Image 1 (cartoon, rainbow, N blue to C red):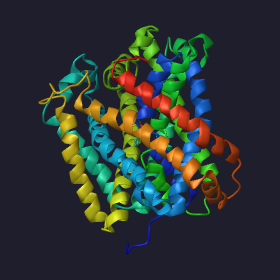
Image 2: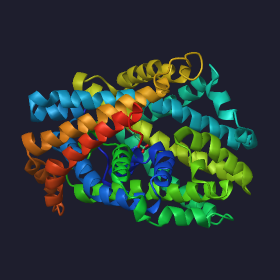
Image 3: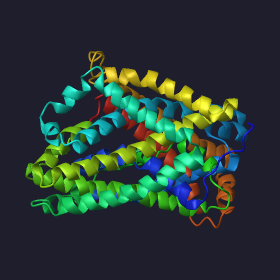
Length: 451
Ligand code: PHE
């Protein structure tokens, strides 16, 4: 490649950009829903234990792989062992699948923000508002295009001037807004029931399902197993402390997920009179239930607008990481310039995103097992490909490359305090757990075993 490889300017830039990738829609709509479903406090406890062990080791491995090789996924695996290039190829397919449909949802968020800001908030509280919107043919496409264009512009500006700069602004704002809404929501009348439910561990609700659900969520939430952290690691300078950075990204990611629970669970409890089932899954929570909650609260239009702004920031920094990963893989492979590759990736995403939009309108009848086209992309990438890539990465690092090679990479920038934990998790614990996630999530989605 003719141009020098870009890099983040320093530690803060790296941590904020990686945290920006990790903190996304998953933290805000999926985590609170899972926490409510799997017993509140006990889920929280399990999640935190897994984050500091399992999540830590996997993230450190990916970042170290990237920094060691200075390459994105395909090049990284290839340069270490040619026989394992296919793992890099598989990892690279995942962001290319996720980016288009993630941007379709990003478009919905952008639309809701626009409606709240322009004073139309109360309309969104109507029962059929959301389904009415996504089943239109043209409008969701327009919002999808706006969101993906925003993402592309930032990626086009480059690692330092685009990704890093934007993360440095959006991430602190995101934290401040999240804290603000969480506090506001906790003080609503009737909210304390929800806070108690969320924070008190009820050990009778603990089961293997709690662990599997927490682990699956952790994976997705930390943007693991899809080449993102390898790419971001390849932009990390050798003197930035790798272990500390991983810890900070984790705190960020888990902290925002925790706050999202505080923001959403008490408010929904207050609204529904303590009915946990009101915390329905994913889209319905964010686009149907919450607008009703906002409509019922004092100052709800302003709070709602702030909420959708913070969700937009979370979604944007994640989609940026997805696009940057795809762009960097193509550039590493062919050496083309950033602008040409960005435009190519943008066109690819538009083409692949349209079916997800149309899956709710003109192609609404294409649904397998109740899954829309968007759900199917989500299933293939998150429930099938990601666990496979994570499993192969552990096998590669644990038994082919050997953990020592990555431990040495981490030690270039300071002592690696958790290296024993790292080795044990990568070699033994993670591969077994990941296989369990794979089996359970496939069975679950196919409706064979409802977890
Ligand atoms: N980690 C992001 C979240 O929690 C999701 C994401 C997945 C981002 C894949 C990028 C890539 O929502």
